[in-house]
Length: 444
Image (cartoon, rainbow, N blue to C red; front, side):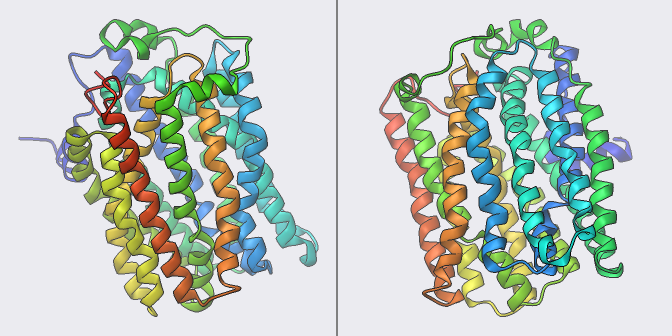
């Protein structure tokens, strides 16, 4: 008979609960488990901040443009940081240490956010938007550094299950904390509640970084004999910068990047509209925002098992098409909904849908990215999608100047349909190339 803890794990995570394998090296199993634990603390930290930035900005007196800048400003800062940051990281033979320091630099900004209410009221909203933007300079670099680092730590044939388990655990724990944080924020006076929550997020971030240091960077070479060659290869640090011409020569990478840019634009256009509509039109408070996140997580816990099977059968790109296509329903429901209860109920379906997107996007990126100077390629990818992240939220707010919320959401729904078909087109193009197989088959 299974122990109670195993029964709970199997109920929550399905087959992914058996994340360790006896036929795999112990260092690999250790790194997978540690990466999952790191993800739990990472999302616990971020989910005590990110769900509440929009409503916190509004309480500080932010305008619609400033709410849109909460998405666009970090993207603009990322645009300046990622490629130079990637060149720097690619020169480092030991990526874990440099990733740690950039992570720490980003987390220190949580303390700055907690201090915003101490300033003059007329400057608070502007200062908050500026801090959120500047925080993304080390954040963007740490993100591409982590992506490059973890691609060497977890070999391709283990990524689908490892990241599915990680994402499920992250969603479950992160949402539980966000729910608690929302309850605290609505029962403590403003701005003390926000300051307490942001400071607690900083403390959790310190625990997160401690766990990150426990990942064994040297183990990758040790289990490389059983992993595909590209996952175990020790790429020497290069003093040469990756030129744009070299990037454009990688057709699989370029086509996937272009599809991602169009998808991200169609996806992110509606973001500021959601926040403004939830708070200003439907009257959502912090607790309601937490409930929305909770339902989204509930759906994702259901969805990950299904999307893992789809991904293993059809590959990353087809999975992206299948999972991104229904995302048009989200703005469509907002267009005709006048009740928070309807939006909350639909968020359960949204979570189940988006778990497939979340699972396949990163796997597909690692699959199409050349192993040599991987960090720089990832930086070019992230820079490209960041351009859309700058423009899309402002475009979304601009829609409200020429049409109502209802029509703006309908336009966003149509954009999402077009963005989804981009992945289908890329899949069709790559199917014509013998070397461009996608999914687990190409991952070993």
